[in-house]
Length: 396
Image (cartoon, rainbow, N blue to C red; front, side, top):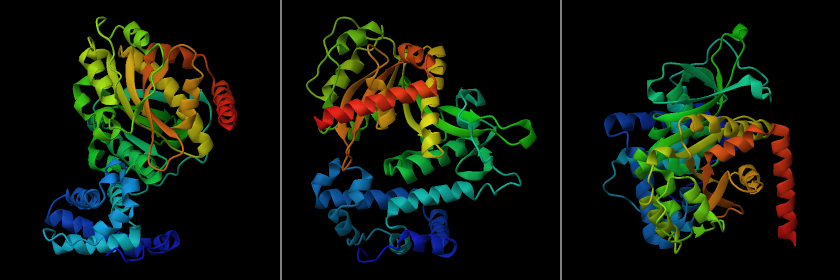
């Protein structure tokens, strides 16, 4: 199986209607005959075999694990318990998509798009970089929303839950290759989400376009938070707290005054911190922050999403948001904050990345005040100037 030569991108595009769609139809037949969880079963069993072949791969993301020689060896292992349909589809998928995780992502995208044929109206050719043309909302229980939205990833409008799932698949999974999202895609389809939308004029008679989204989770679901998953708490993460972190935590009024922080490791630090929370209603996690569009548009939407989500969280009386951030523009901006608004807790270079990913905290009231003062142009100048400073320091 491992000897099958995957198609290149040109071949995949050329064969898409016949070859790739045939894979989708086979997957649908397997789902109907066996289980909708077979996609997860195949990926997880191959990953588990990879870990047993080379335990060092346990510290890797799915993307990097799939690229190892150990994973290629795992593909040669015949899993007797699998139906023949699993084996035939896996073999076909590797030849067409390169690997199973990519297929799983594309299949989920296909299942959403096929439910919503393209309408007669067309998308606008231009999205303005004007703050006044965009609205922001926190929507509770998006699975109950009846309103339809457009995205930049499909011509047809669809309900909010499918819109956000499609955006997450196209941006975080397909583009950024965070395949870990696939098994928990359901949380992109329910619960509380932030959306930044462009108001289309009445003459177009089309729904608003979602250009940014994020999931917001309160403390009652903390056991499901990305922040506390094993991958983000292992020994590869190093604490990088500011020198005044003790005072900053206590000044929020969310933690008991009579404890000292345990900073021996990220796990001991977080466990001790969580045990001393006195007001969990004012804490949340913000994750799966997405922006769509071109690189230029994405930079603007990223700024505006941060600016618009802060007052919405502030109105909910949220004072602290747990975050995991790898976006360089966000990191450089937070480095310009002199006193409060944001601080890191730990960091790690993920797999073969040259940049650090940071776990940290938004101090909502302070960060709101800082962002409210800024236009996109002033924000961009600060980010660019900070990036130059960092580059000069690294050069020295």
